[in-house]
Length: 422
Image (cartoon, rainbow, N blue to C red; front, side, top):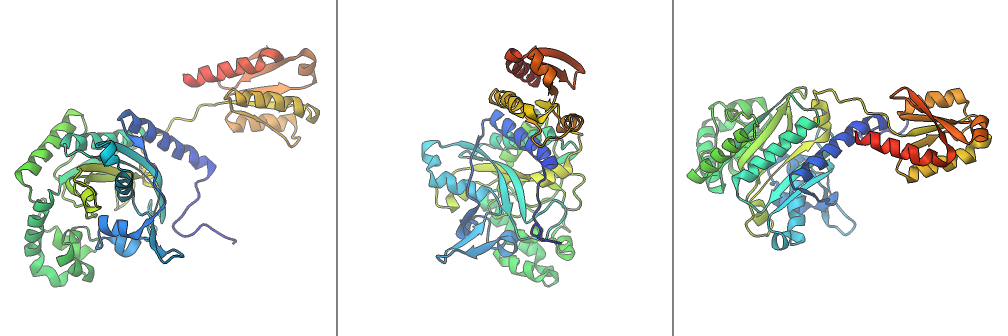
């Protein structure tokens, strides 16, 4: 076999692009409906950005980043996630000074050198939302509601929101000490990585996939996080807000997000059909990240979902795409120039217009017209040239009409656009 795509990467073929485009269109439409603006960041970033934000003890930094030196000896990475890049851009372009509270979303590829598995690739694609510049728990409510709204409209209907709070940094310091005391008797039973995490970042033990570590870390039921009065009040507000928004959630499940920057509200959306790693979307609040990267205090909250995993989790049958555009078939190749003139005029009017350039038989062209998904088919032959009129067939309505040459383009354009609007 010849050259193939690298392991952990995949080609999105034309038949699949339709589903991808539908997800991207839905995400953009709903994000803008909620007041979020799109921001695009580079695929490559300074390695220090993720060391300072994601955390040196996380799997992303220790195992999964594509990390290398450029020709000048500068260490760069292919971005493994979107939040740190968005915050870097927020600070670099002084959005904290010119706009204060900003609501942003992004779509694009991310890269992690992890073992490929179902729905997880070395190049994968995320859509995410970040609201930066507010400590209000109602922003958490909005972000989670938007996340659920996007998933639902993209066909992910069999999913559950897991909701929790990791508390503020002071709460986490208290919780870390209590967790160390609880795990100390079993320290020798933990894997070598978790033994190293014990002092550096005890919460990473909660996220370990090793069965023994997981059993030890979670043998005490209930959340490992202790909340101060303010964090508890904020969490209560989030729960009330989601209830008011008719967003079901489960706040009894115990889990921890794996990145260092999370504080207070965290959530995951668990969907069926994804195997053991069943989170289709996840996020939470990261109130200290802007400050950690050299900016002022700015409360922030966001989420991300992997498009590949979202497509795997779709449970609603997507409606069949409606037929669009026109296929102009010609009875003989001598009419190609006249046909192309019509086709190009239609394209300039915003109508999808197709035709054959290779001299296929009329029968073959009509088969191609049906497979193309075009709604209209027109035939141009010597009779049509003599009568200066074209018979237009509507394949969806099973109807036809005869149009003079001089009104053909305008009439088709009007009918195509009016029917697409409906």
